[in-house]
Image (cartoon, rainbow, N blue to C red; front, side, top):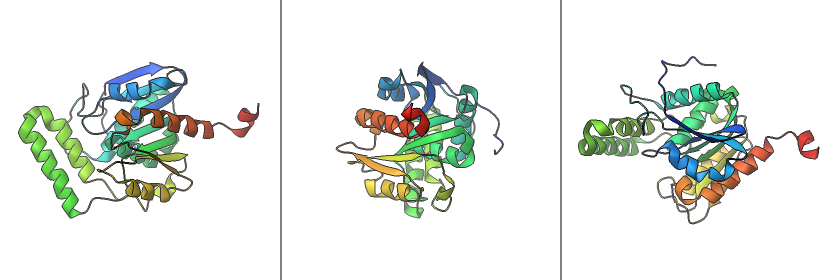
Amino acid sequence: MPSLPPAIDLTVHRTGRGAPLVALLDLGRVGAAMQRALRDLRREHTIVAPDLRGHGASPTPKGPWSIDDFSSDVARIIQDEGPPATVVGVGLGAAAALALALGHPNLVSGLILSGLGPKAEDESRQDRWTSAARAVRDRAGEGGEGIALSIEAMGSRPDWRGALAQVHSPVMVLAGGADRAVPPDDQRELSMWIDGARFTTAPRVGHDVAGEGARELVSAVRLLTMEQVPAEQLAA
């Protein structure tokens, strides 16, 4: 397993009981929002929803950051909870979850990804991410530095297509049918690069699957975790 960079202590929201379900949200969102989205699973899972670095009450270490920094933060949380864990991610959280599965596969028992494609950004889209980070800094000053660094990390994320054959845990890609930020076809492409991955859509739901499509997200978790149960246990 790759070594981890110096630790930072994320603020983590926990609720429920059972096998760990680590829930990672998108840019500008905090863990408590994912707790609310997944609250129907509290009797089945311990929902572990961190504020990612630079978000909420978590620290903002000096940048620049990469997506691997986010995944390493989450790896420590899963190690503390007792691996492996099912990991749910939306947007930035999906990127961190995918990097986690590639860099620390023994920590992940299954993935649910939303709002993410498999490709790196081209030059024009990288410029958009850079401009967005600049706008956050101009508007929020030092208080927006964590979000700005996170935006830059998303803009410079790698092209995962050549590495996705290494993901062997069960994967479901849940796309918002009305997602304009990452169109469903891009998310379908992500599923096609991962052996055995399922693809489904949440109709009339946009990019914020946790906020707009909580019912579909809960159903996806239940379906994926059922697939992780050995056949002999299901027959018992």
